[in-house]
Image 1 (tube, rainbow, N blue to C red):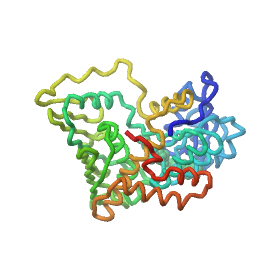
Image 2: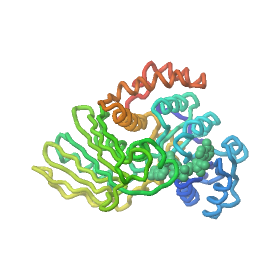
Image 3: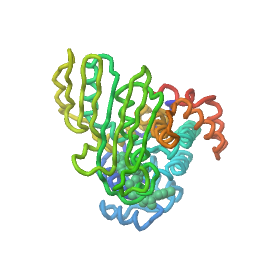
Length: 376
Ligand SMILES: NC(=O)c1ccc[n+]([C@@H]2O[C@H](COP(=O)([O-])OP(=O)(O)OC[C@H]3O[C@@H](n4cnc5c(N)ncnc54)[C@H](O)[C@@H]3O)[C@@H](O)[C@H]2O)c1
């Protein structure tokens, strides 16, 4: 599906309520305040003091705060919501916003499970509102350059990401069962789908917690995905590996029949091979907006024009399915097929759905595959 309500007025700033004023919420607040195309009109957080402090930090102490979205929708004349709550709150907040008539730009992951994400895709259809995931690591001019460089490699067959960092976050990640897989790997998995232009088929994953890890759950993993056409994508990473850290985008290598390309996640890619050698294109002199500024710009464009953004919920679900399949594989010690996982999640989502209008849309799909439509 790609039809959603658009704003009639395309010239005035879009009135936005943000939900979530934690670590990432404060980064979003600064962006909203600095972006002329939007007007921040309200901030929601269960912790009202945290919300007030966050607003004071960006010089907007006068903006309305509340502990729930419903308290602010009418009084602020909100036109859109940016959801930066913890993953467990994404489904209720997104659903509430869409059925209040507001499009939503939501931090990744769009929901904690594929089943709940399917419910959100159906809720987007039932409400007629856009739901977009902010998959912020797609917005790098150098990533587009890396993708472009792959065309010189002939038939692409192998892709790998190495991701090694040692952040001490505190908060919800420290107690998750699979912090690296669930909170971080979706960025790399989503980029792999973008680079390879193919759908993932299956995964075999090993996940573990090194002896010195400060996380309660597994902070390290190796996942081997098969994509359509037999292509393999390997992700190996750790969130407790200090020293020689990779970039936040990880370190990439792609091999094809005529050569290989590498990307350190930050600077221009390198390409080498039989007839593949080429000078990478010079970086765009007018690079697009990066990370969350890029996703905000695409969201605003979408709700003004109806153009379907790359993080639209239906197309984003396969990235989340890669995460969930990797977690299931690590737990069961066996290969997990993503098509089967999607259909299991689809049945669960119908059973668990609390809204009749959303359940009707889900049932009408017939299968997850047909509900999601083309995904690459
Ligand atoms: N794209 C990125 O690079 C990136 C980086 C960091 C975090 N994130 C994502 O951003 C989101 C938030 O992460 P964080 O680090 O800011 O978490 P956090 O725990 O620091 O903050 C979350 C905030 O949400 C509030 N909250 C929770 N449930 C709520 C509800 N129902 N209604 C209103 N407020 C609620 C909490 O009170 C808290 O203030 C997560 O989904 C995370 O994965 C993305």
